[in-house]
Structures are given as C-alpha cells and as structure tokens.
Image 1 (cartoon, rainbow, N blue to C red):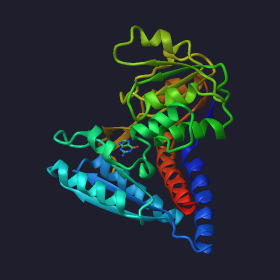
Image 2: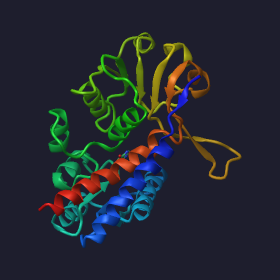
Image 3: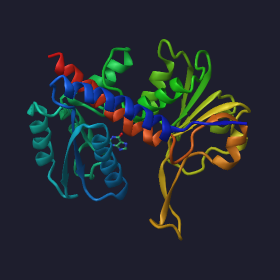
Length: 292
Ligand code: GUN
C-alpha cells in the first residue's frame, strides 16, 4: 500500500506557520511582507497561477500587488516596471509570471530583477548561490519538492534519483538540490535526447517527473517500492466538467500508484507546494529587510 503525499494539506500547514510569523512581525511593529507579481498576456493557466498566488498572500497576511499587461506590451515597458519594483522599498519580493510572449526575452527580464527581491529564485545569482550551497532564494517548485521529501521523511541518502526534464525552473535546479550535501541522492537527469528512458527509470528509487507530457510514466517503467513525485500540470480537455478541462500529471497515476511507496497526486501534490514556496521566499526577503 502506498502513502499519498498530500501537498494540499502540507501547504496549508506551512501557510499557518507563515501566518503566525506575519502576525508576530505585525505585533512588533514591522511592515508585513509585500509580494508583487507581473502578469503579461491572457494565458489561462498563468492567470490562474497568479490569482492563486495573490489569494495565498491574503490568507497569510502578506500585502500583494498585481500588475497586468496585454500580450503586446513592449519589452522596455516591462523592464521599466521591474526597475520600479527594484527601487520600491515597500516591496520585499516580486515575480514575473512565465512564459512571456515571444517578443520579450525571458533571460533579459529575469536578469533585470534585483537578486535580493527575486522571490522566484530564477536570477543567475540565486541559482549560482543554490549551486554552491549558500543560503538564498530557491526556485519555487524544487523548493516545494524538497519540503515534501523532508516532511514525509523520505530517505534520499545514496538513493538513485531520476529527474525527467531539464528545464531551468524545475529539472535542473531540483537535480542540484537532490545531489547536494545532506540530501545525498545519486541523480540522473533524462530528457528528450536520452536513449531508452524506461530502462533508466526502472533503476530509480525516486522519480521526479517534470516533462509536461500527460501520463508519460507508466507502471512498467517503475520499480516496486519507488517514490514518485509528479510535477506535471497539463490542462487537458474534460467535457462535462464545469471548467471544461482537468489537470493531468506526467504520471499514469492509476497504474503507477500500486507499485509505489510514496506518490504525489495531481492536483494536490506539488502544485500547492510551489505556491507556498513563493511565500517562504517572500518571508525570507522581508526578514532580511528587517535585519537591514
Ligand atoms: N511559470 C511556471 N512556473 C512558474 C513559477 O514558478 N514562477 C513563474 N514566475 N512563472 C512560472
């Protein structure tokens, strides 16, 4: 029998912990943490993500600011807004929701963010700090995954861990964290050019699926007793539901779950943890501000 990793409940527990800290800051006369977000365009997933992030801020007592632009906003207008946020001392941290329209260079936008306000942990300075094990902002999804592993006391030392996907925001950073000192996993990253992914997966004690392909991981690719963390959240059509779609993970849950020791559901696994990581990064930024 497998243990279902309940990201929704874990994230709710963490929000409570954060809310307590915010209440204590407020009582001591400090400004509450302030997170700002920039949303460009009308991608429905991005809109949902950002509105959920704002909702989370309200729940824990943070201040939040949302700035939205149309799909055709010129790059220099977006960069000017980032400059404004960088120099606004009332804002502790901010994010620019990705992906951005094709005419805007994502790396340029990320590099324009002041690393001390980079609540997403995407700036090269913060990724570099993570790489060498220094304290700082961690990318939200990898941070959320590590927190689930910690809170569910999943053994990682010396374990064979296979990460599927090499994105800058999930696959690559989580592979660094898993192989770090104290976590001590042996990590393999597989991607679209890897020969024979199923054979590699069958050797895995821990699988992190972050490729964005619904149901990619099937039972025959998974070893008995494996831990499976599903990062996929692809919208697939679901006629008859209110919204007309449902979220599908990268793992074929029905067939894979019975072989697992631990598995995350989609939705309700990694997703809520990603959101809560952003709050943790913002709190971290605000605490640094408090210390001057
Ligand atoms: N797009 C998908 N995930 C993320 C995230 O964690 N942060 C931002 N800014 N954009 C995303």
